[in-house]
Length: 432
Image (tube, rainbow, N blue to C red):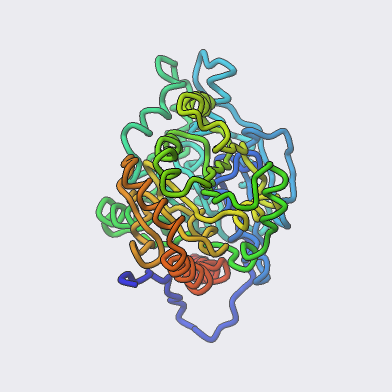
């Protein structure tokens, strides 16, 4: 396959020692079913796998986009804490915008929750800034290790996307900088016991930027058995799609980063290859104005009967499995993608994949072997490759079979979680 996955070694001085039961807490900025993405999926599924191994794994996060302080999501306990954005003059809409994507929040109650939770062995941050600083400070006070996962937001994010995250706070006075200094927000990466990168490109960049630090490539995974199930006929009936429709499925946030507009603009040419093609977009709306742009483009191109938009599904919603089962092909046209966990889901479901050649995608996809890649934003190349797979059963089958095999052997959550457990065990043992 041309690439060697970087496994996490277990360096314990006593390899025969029985692994200890660990209590770990993962800390993302937010964690809600209504705004699910690759980060949330990684946290949930790795926590579930660790629990199956006999460990205690939970999630501590903010109340962003949620009113529930405690929730059980597929067996994983989630605790949420009050928070604010320490900027003067933020409107309700600006706060909501920051909740959806990228807000640098402050939560003193979460700091207290982490500090006084009994028996914790290790903390796992999924964000930097003030919240990452809180994880760093608690770990130092408790004298336990912490690790941080980079999901494409540090060394591998386009400048245009980084600038868009700052839009809500332009011209606002930030009174919370003192807390960033207190919690050591600028030293989150430097003081972490290990830095985990879900994308190959960010892994390479992090090694160069942080010489001497322990940096590991820890990719996302998939429940390969779960995505084999689903009822495609039920999905078609629910959404009024004919039995012979060739469904092109795209599962990702409705956001400029995911570039669904390019896929929509390619649809007329795709339809020339396969007139029965129908596009289904599934994902939470993180940029409402982008959804309006999508709807306007659909109207201008006269594609109302050829596009179905479903604004987000919960991670345990069986309709997501039904959608994969109903589809003929999966497409991910992102402008920036740290990894692309939905590609693993499509592989596990037995679908051929067309994706943009950006970010972490080329780091685990083998172009022409288990997927077809195109240059981001290239509408004609995208249309040609999608159209080819819709009409070529042999090539479509070969790609799908290769991807499904890799999903089961290399990327099943049980495989990924064992690597994560080995790292946790080593760091906790070393700290003690």
